[in-house]
Length: 321
Image (cartoon, rainbow, N blue to C red; front, side):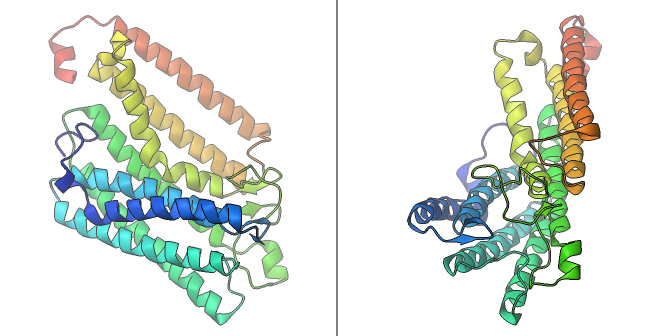
């Protein structure tokens, strides 16, 4: 990877199966949005087409970013290509089942109420496990192809590693709750913690406003794949007006603070979800940790920018850059 997240790779370098999947997801997202207006049926308290819509949008973002990363891999490109193709296949199976069961107004996740639904849920679980393993192979390829710009290399590597963590956190949702163990109703696993699924939630996202919700760390971690590179892009754009950010070492150090802050926030919201605390009502140690992450992050950034702005140019600095 000569310049991770630098110039956009030539069209023939992008991973085509992932790009095709991403385009298909955009079309399906539009279709799901239209169906959400037309079809007012609900499943576990939410519109039947809300989940397909969210998964289509998320899938498009995820796969187009992977296609970009793979397009810049040189060493290990064959393995990355094959892994990307398997990601596209596995996600296609997942999305197909989600849309099919949405059309039937039936729950797709955690549903083992009948032998048929048990098989469907098993296929979906296996598909996502395969996506995780293939993404791990792509992550290894990305990390093994460092570029000349350390900040861009950091953005690519940390983004995909945090995405793997976020995907892994999703498996917490597959564990049975105490209520399900005591009174089995054909469902094993849940999004919410401390409250039943389907209660009051944030608009569109559906995240619980009265209890913990494991979808939050899952979402946050997965989309580090886009968030970290976008943070670097913002720093590079700001470098046009903020002279210190035009320095490669300054951007690298600020981005390192962003990555550490993102990882700390991911850990904090994971704990918040596991203890059954709503994202809109942080309190206790979770609130203190959140404030500390923000304050330390801002303070560390200010210190780095101040020091970098006052470092005299010289051989050592030129070498670091």
